[in-house]
Image (cartoon, rainbow, N blue to C red; front, side):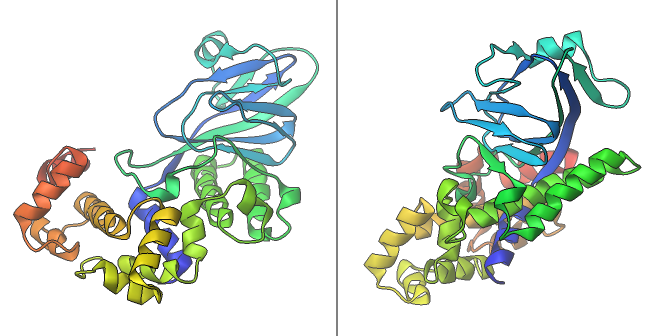
Length: 317
């Protein structure tokens, strides 16, 4: 497992999956307020025209050009508009006045100017609290002209536009996968040193993955979370003194090394309970717990539900 495989491990455990809201064709003067909704990662891809995006929390504002994607990671309320300061109309009122047609397109407004958008979201297991999702900005923008060092991300944006234009069989399945890819690509590049996005959208966790010392400890935890790791053993793996390692890990990852290990064990157990046929006792052992009662107590304390009850509810869904 290398650093990128570790990131794959994290996103698999988050059980990330995407959906489309609709395609939107907004004309003339418009301002639509999209309400806050859980911890969804929202996307708006501008296919044609121009559009302003304003996050209600923090007031971050960006103007989108054609082929650009805005990511709103924390499910916060935001406004889509033709000018930066126009008073918005709530999305439910817009949908009531102009529900999407049979083709899935929301057509709203009249007059000069137009913004054609593809609107969707990624969702994940909301009970999972992982530092890869912590401290993200309220608004992130991927612009093709800024991605000279990331041709694969630029190509994904282009494919998103082409596929939405084609509107052929399987379009929704393809578009949702592309949105997931773009989110992971955005997170991956946020920790790359020397890149424009690294300073603008700094991710502490991604920076820790890029750190030559901390990454060794993180990889060790992910490779073998069942091992009886101690702080001293993780520090030796990272090639650092115990005190220096503990301080640097806590500052960059946002939690202590042993706290991260404990949380990762529980997250891995949660995924295995939902997706595998292993017994609860086998899962407890694989995740570093010496006894099933100890695992059950720790799991219920973390998630408010016992592992057996969670497994039954996950399979029911």
